[in-house]
Image 1 (tube, protein in one colour):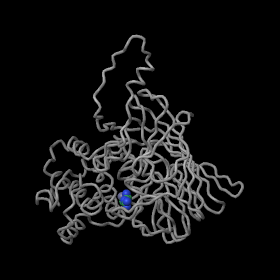
Image 2: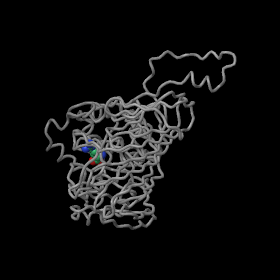
Image 3: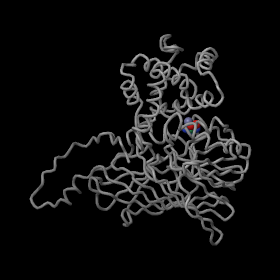
Image 4: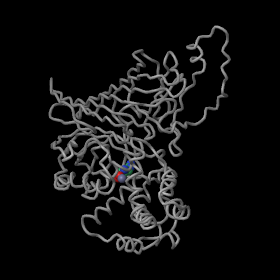
Length: 469
Ligand code: ARG
Ligand code: ZN
């Protein structure tokens, strides 16, 4: 799915098709077709995602041998053209492409730049036409440094591997429209040598072992952003249970993650607590992928977050809160990241308040008194490419608490519960959130939002201490 579709306008002049006598509708479509954009229109990452089509489903098949470190992939994307399309791009980083088929027909392709796979079908796709793209590929997947840890394909201490990253992630291991604006259902078949276990997001279907290879199948029936998909391969110990409401829970523990088992056992309790604040749990599965590796962050992979060795109980609360904020309602662009991180980080405070009796006003005053001047520097909205994660985990929490005191309990909780529900399986931007809050509050909050979210520096006194704070 893609809710935006506002790809950069083509510079080619709009040709008004003068239907010459005798020209067939098909020929007209062919003549009007234009290339899809190499980016979906993200202000920070112009090449992230692609324009001209809307991915609906990925059926990804990978075979991975930890000894060689080589991944073999065979992936099919089902998409719908959003306009007459003469060619289009997928995002794929590194990897050797062996073949591309569009609707079963072997098709020409090119690689452009660091992560574009350009596909030129023999016949253009008509606007709205559904089509299938199958890509067969192999290689050693890459990894790139990011401001916080690294994105892409990582190796584990026991010799396994996992895909993890944000903003980009999917394009490191399968060809995709790697931007949260285009969410699609996701199915994975993973083959690993016997003795290894592959774990992914979604429902676990049957696992079989034959000729020394174990094949498992994972199905996520709800639309998911590329960076919220994953595969992790390790010597996992997998536990399976069902929550009271029937939600299947799969926890996978890699060697080195033993310390987190007591916290992981509280997953059901955490989900129930968050439901008491945010409304019904939006994902179809739960659990966690617990890695032995230390990569400096955890990630809210859909319905089954991925935790590095540094995670704590509070991290689990944070990643599960993302199932409402980030996964159910996803960002429209990476400038909107506070919609994910400010909310999930505030959930950690809500846990402290609800479960440990913390007085959040006291916590707020203490934090304001303790932080350095630089703490206030990063804006929480439109913070700039590469700076997405600077302020959202710290200043973001205070901003959410100030918003709560500004709105009052009734309006604040109405906002928290209705925001993910109203954007179910969809996307939204930060400015849309501001309008949403103002509608519920019934008054303008221009000053409040400007001071807390758009500007650097300590917010003005009246917004730093609204109402009873
Ligand atoms: N969304 C992740 C979290 O909730 C953070 C991801 C940060 N990105 C990165 N490349 N390290 O903690
Ligand atoms: Zn987060």
